[in-house]
Image 1 (cartoon, one colour):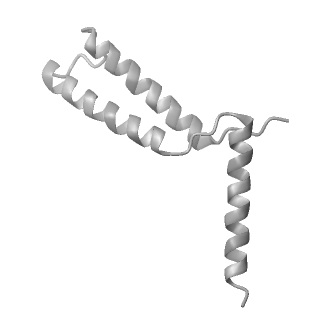
Image 2 (cartoon, rainbow, N blue to C red):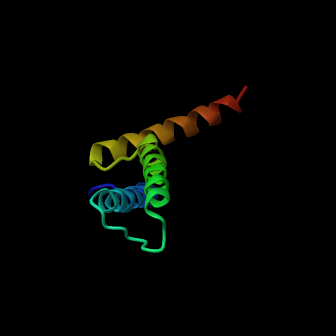
Length: 88
């Protein structure tokens, strides 16, 4: 059975895809939000795209079975380490 990809990973990936599509549309002259001024809109969109891109891939996005299992193992190791710290 394949481990489940976390909801956080899916949400970050969806937000990244939306901002990248928005950026590409802006670059080719299609303004998804027609009420914004072109120059201001392009600048804000570029800033949002950069921020979302960094935020999305800064996090550990585990898509493969092996990576998800490794994440679970790491969480288990951290939990065991905290339990051992409390024992003297």
